[in-house]
Image (cartoon, rainbow, N blue to C red):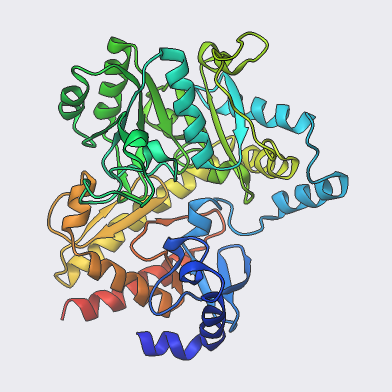
Length: 430
């Protein structure tokens, strides 16, 4: 496998050696590194990546799952090209931010008012601050395996063992008000908050980095009821699930409405973005015309509501609004999950395939995977080997991470994934 990869990626190897001189670990984000070195993309179109050696890969990583329409979709690119001629960054208010906010409010059940940021990390940070401002409480509940970006207060309990800090430089003060609770375990959550003054519970409707594990509907309903009972704000982190599971995201898919929602990825149409939105009475706490310091909750940023991101996002959401493309991908995703499981089981390889909608991941274990603890008890080495085999044979996943579908994926692309999976399963099962 490695010999095959190395023989085809000589230019990427040279670029990686060069990158190590200036970029820590040679990359701009740790998860982009994989053994023996990452390939370097020269161009991308539709469902394909082309590396600097000219090798083609069917892309199921899709820019960290952000590119639901594939790479450089014509409708988005045409809109962006027109906007570039008008202006790329104004630093003033403009109509496009209103149009995208109106579109989000039209599609998302919880979105009465919206503010834009530059990333999902920023959006989570501002949503947590807003929850604290509105409730007058400090404690925040997040879940084992939940990934909410690099914001200090939420950068805990991401990987097992959960008592090991996720990063150097996180102070005890930054984490002292964060409660880490078990996922898909309502009674466990109730026990954690029993004697605590909690401002918000932050949850992904599907754990993304935590293993592509869907929340159980009754779990989300139970969280909603618990928050209502204790006057806690419920925050859905829909950076991954937003505009993917349904036009209105995971909250529409599950029929559970949060108080605040965090978005990113798909919302930007291929450009950097984040957003947080929710009930008008909660969002109004950002209104500096109503609240004075220190009573308002601050939000801002130089590139907030950047016109290029607004343009790309609006073009993307309009294509997804009626739900037809999303429904088609969801059906394909369900089919892929079933077929991957069948392929491995035919060779007596123990596997659990998780995911929901157009998202999927494999875990090499006999144990049912309902939380991140089960993910880390599975054979992670075998998962990395599976993905590296796929990469060496022209199918790209970020190793050990989930796969995602786009509207650009063809039946041939799906068959390529399944046939390469079968080849690996045949080797793995011997």
